[in-house]
Image 1: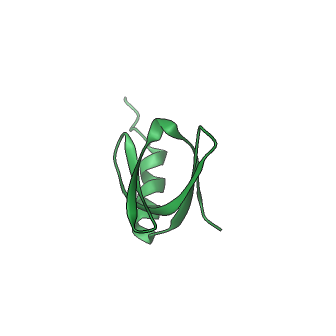
Image 2 (image 1 turned 60 degrees about the horizontal axis):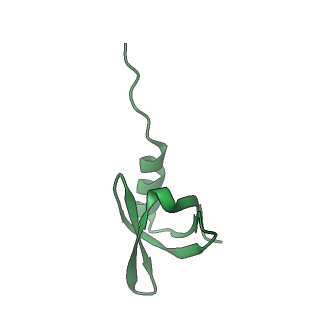
Length: 68
């Protein structure tokens, strides 16, 4: 019997995408991006920051949290 794949990332990102939540995305470089999640796929996310879209590869992300 095989276990179903549970993908925590997709559930969390989809929930924040639907709610249009403002997020802080911490990168492995120490930089923090602040914006709304617009799209995501297996390898990257797109954040909207001040009217422009920023593509961030998931391997560069250290943390994701809701902005205060």
